[in-house]
Image 1 (cartoon, rainbow, N blue to C red):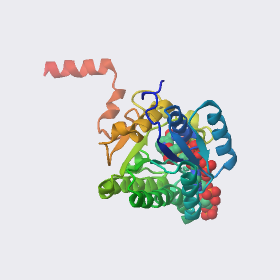
Image 2: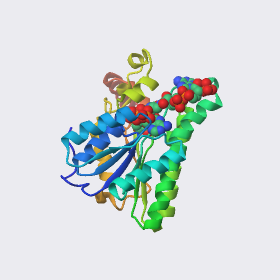
Image 3: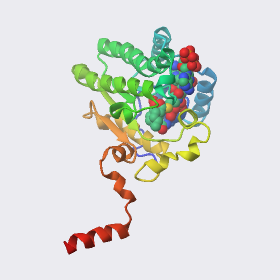
Length: 286
Ligand code: HXC
Ligand code: NAP
């Protein structure tokens, strides 16, 4: 799987990626840097961020700048933005990618368990969006926000209810501000990924032998999980100026996984060719 955009497509852009030290965030960061962007990465694990930045910086001209923060803490969020401005003088794009999640029957959850997820996913996104958005408005910067949601942001899903509630809020924020802040030339889009293997998601959503019992690729009509570069390609396009007219959109990248669950007759894929032949014969006889 190759990178999609032309060399230097993101040259001179400064992009801030929350949760940029692991999983899909890290893959996006690697591709943005390859395309010439300078990137600020933030999450709670300082050692991990430092290590990722060191490795990427050793191989590239553009720079990754690690600043630890807990997205739930507004003071820490403000500090990240201060440091980013000191370092690069601006931030052009914000990717709200940091998330927390786990599976559980909802009746087993405490309200604190809901808080943990909603504070990271929804409040963390609001903390960064509002703080940076106000700066952009004041400085008349044409900002660009990309939120990473999920396909259950609009369908809802049992067993991940705090995450479903929080991601639905992020999707609503995306669509609301796409319209309200268009007058400031700030645009908002979202990506809804289907299953993409990452340690963070797989360990929490497929613990123990669930991995073997519920192979995620079996739920996807195209018969496989996503490749990180596929998502990075889409993200790079959405943060680039090539997508300037795309605003308020959520783009699903899931091999039609969620639609398979939605279409009323999709289960008919279990019907064999011989059975279809039989139905056809019956129909013709009639
Ligand atoms: C039930 C749980 C729980 C679990 C924690 N809690 N884990 N309840 N099942 N597995 C409860 C705790 O008991 C506690 O409530 C409350 O939640 C807070 O827990 P802490 O451990 O103190 O929280 P914290 O240290 O803030 O950690 C946050 C976390 C953790 C979300 C719980 O997993 C984390 O740091 N995750 C970050 C990375 C991550 O989740 N990545 C996956 C993203 S994948 P009480 O009442 O006991 O105090 C994703 C994919 C979506 O979003 C779609 C996939 C297809
Ligand atoms: P991941 O590696 O666990 O990514 C989550 C990131 O968020 C981590 O880097 C984590 O870093 C950071 N984070 C968590 N809590 C934080 C906090 N309080 N403050 C700052 N950073 C925090 O999992 P992933 O699969 O790559 O997920 C990335 C995004 O894709 C998420 O938005 C997720 O919902 C979405 N997604 C993933 C899939 C999938 O199949 N993988 C499917 C749909 C949607 P620290 O622990 O260092 O803080």
